[in-house]
Length: 328
Ligand code: NAP
View 1 (cartoon, rainbow, N blue to C red):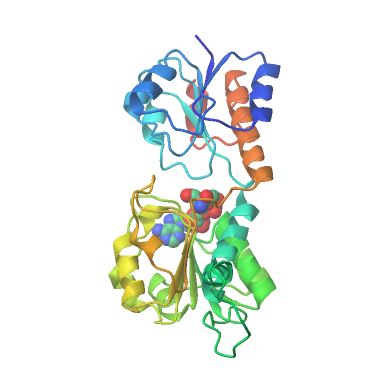
View 2 (tube, rainbow, N blue to C red):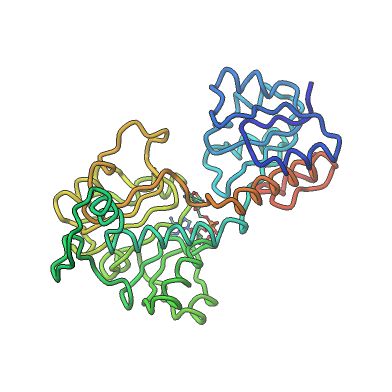
């Protein structure tokens, strides 16, 4: 029986860390997630679990491993894990905050720029040999980003990093919502906390940066798109279920809003999304928010370090439920 189960392929440096600590491990070195039966089998007897967001870690799975002490998600979002069920079982859950903040903010801004300036359309046009000469009314004529109003829904680590790019790099006016006010961002970036309705009404670009929770489920539906400017763009590099995807497609098709940059989908793995069929001012990406080599390596290492700490009897640095640790 291995002490640590690693459900999918992660960076080799993280596996080396486990080896250096002499932790035995079963490693499913594949980019394909295990199905629930195989995952149930894989974690039997283990004390530490390193998993990805495509692994659903619920009470039933946890009960397959009565010795389980720590679940380390290789992600900052942890909507794939039932943290309450873990707490009830004395299992500490960890995530990978901070290391992916700037990388995810870069991707968010890349989607914003690409949607506004219609980069994928321009790229397709070039590659299909359609570009012959400069035209004033270029087929890919876009809209300005500089100086516009950026609305951040969820002014946390990533939201603030997106806001910083907008305010300091692109002279944007920043509006935000969050559960609590952010005096530092207000001072540094001139950001203003507003109601969700005000943010919808006044923003030219809206970036979603909240976690996926019951409260944020379908935060954006037709009702919200109707309140947005017809010239507005929606950028979602947070989680798919925050946006009702069919409504977004309808809003784009009917011109309720102008464009979108979408990295995450309501149903992943993606079977078919109406969004992927829309082209004008719409950019889609396959959940690559944190996907830089450096960051995915750091996330892998962080997850391994969290498991190592827990199995050494220390509360792991990125515990989401540290309150249960004293009882272990
Ligand atoms: P974070 O620091 O916890 O920020 C989340 C923010 O959302 C907080 O400011 C929080 O407010 C706010 N919030 C929560 N519920 C809200 C609501 N109902 N309305 C408005 N604001 C609300 O988390 P983070 O590190 O920035 O990460 C954010 C999310 O991005 C993650 O949960 C993850 O799902 C997603 N993500 C996606 C990718 C990707 O690959 N596309 C990569 C990384 C992360 P308070 O500050 O007041 O609590």
